[in-house]
Image (cartoon, rainbow, N blue to C red; front, side, top):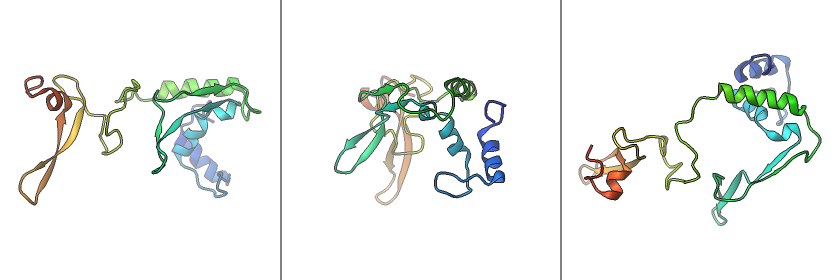
Length: 162
């Protein structure tokens, strides 16, 4: 259906109409679940190891691997569910439809990547550095969140006075 031009939301609705059960055994489908299946390399018989890594074994916090650890790709690891050609066509369509990302994955992880909604997404309009969410204490009881240029924060206000 994806190769025929249908989107993930349409496919999810159609799966519900057909009464197809998901991996939990319920007839409930969402667009993000369908997209997860379309972009998963396991469906073509391959495996990518090391997509995530554990930051701290005590808290068991895991992060997406953006180059911090090694990744291993194993081709033809198991029997494919869909042919390699069909999967490659779907991947080509998916990448063509994908919106450009606001945050480039350069392998450098900002300190607070996932702490706030817009963390590592906002950039200074004057110098291009990332903005960081900081708390301004207006009085002893009230606080105000502000987004501040990291260039000005780390290197001084002279580097980005705006």
